[in-house]
Length: 155
Image (tube, rainbow, N blue to C red; front, side, top):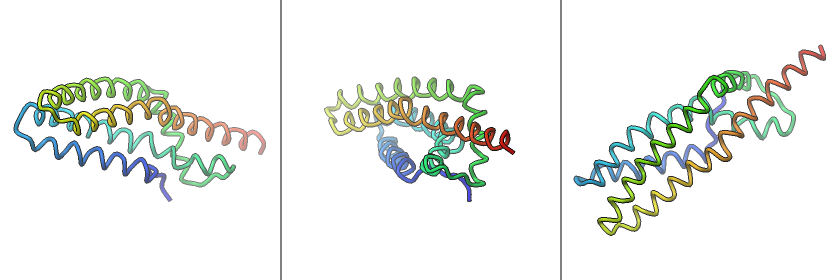
């Protein structure tokens, strides 16, 4: 078994990508801004989905004191997060939010309130990742390493 992004998070990313992709088809300032964001978000989401968010799938198991072989991947996640990925993700978010603000401005100029609501939801998603998911992933990975060390020390 391999750790994966929890389905709720994966579906939220898919939904954001689909809505954003629809905006990229527009032949106006909004479409241009959406295409710029799509490139940023795509690369950022790969980092999250491959190198951070899978840690969250282990969280319920660790809360129950259960350890599986797939959790060994948590050491790599902890190393990545401590090695600069954590800051890199926050920097990505700054660029993503700036791009989202361009989309919101274009949407406001066109009177497209539904797009502004999409932007607001996207920004809240980024904030949730920064405030909850990234720290939880880091703590999960660190906790796993601590458990493994305790097991090794008690042997």
